[in-house]
Length: 126
Image 1 (tube, one colour):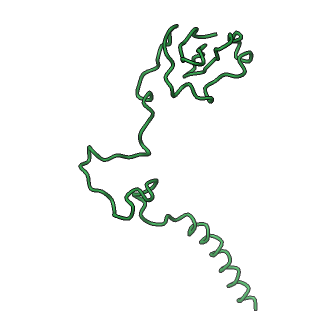
Image 2: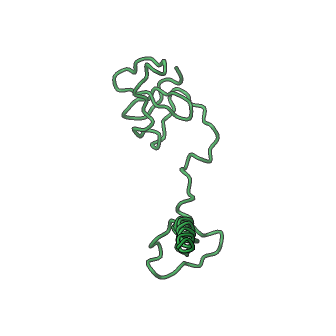
Image 3: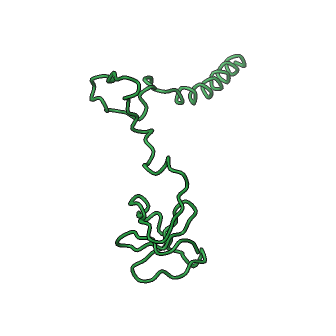
């Protein structure tokens, strides 16, 4: 009886370690991550190395540019005019109240007072 309990205990321990390891394994075909259905079942397209497109690896247009110096009169690019860049708590950042038709926008550590309709920068900084 003790031998059977020992065997069952050993089996439970092995099963406890094997289950998470089995769940962590991939499902094969790991070279296709992120491109499910891209080729519609026709297999991968063979292209010269310089012409291959990796949809997941494409950075935004502004990512390869150095830090930009903003000036009055500059036009804020469209990708920074999204709601996520608007500074609603301008008092918390020690910024002045934006005039009607303007809003504060945070871009790369800079705070820009921008005209809402056109994206023209009125002021840079606090």
